[in-house]
Length: 86
Image (cartoon, rainbow, N blue to C red; front, side):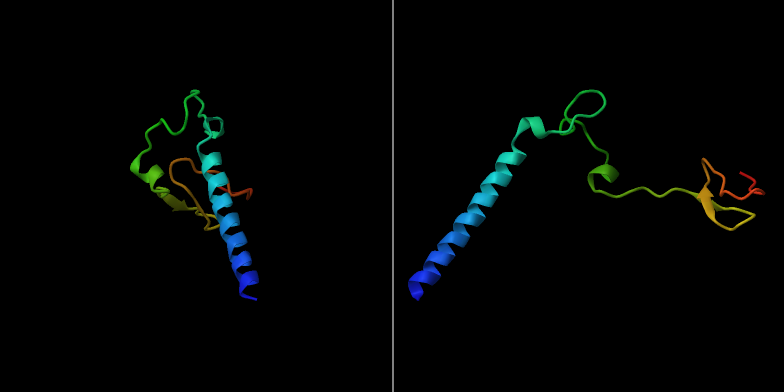
């Protein structure tokens, strides 16, 4: 009984270490790097603080006078209604 438990534990450990090793090999593969539009690796480009932390900066919004929905203050677009002022 104890032998079966030890064999099962050994199999689990081998599978976990194998999974970690495969994940490392995939991460270290230079062909898996994403290239940006200029042709350089994305890992070589510097990101601003907001991009590197995963935060998205807010945008000023204004209320549509007709329907009350919020649209971008910089580039307002039509809300789809015929009497939309944008």
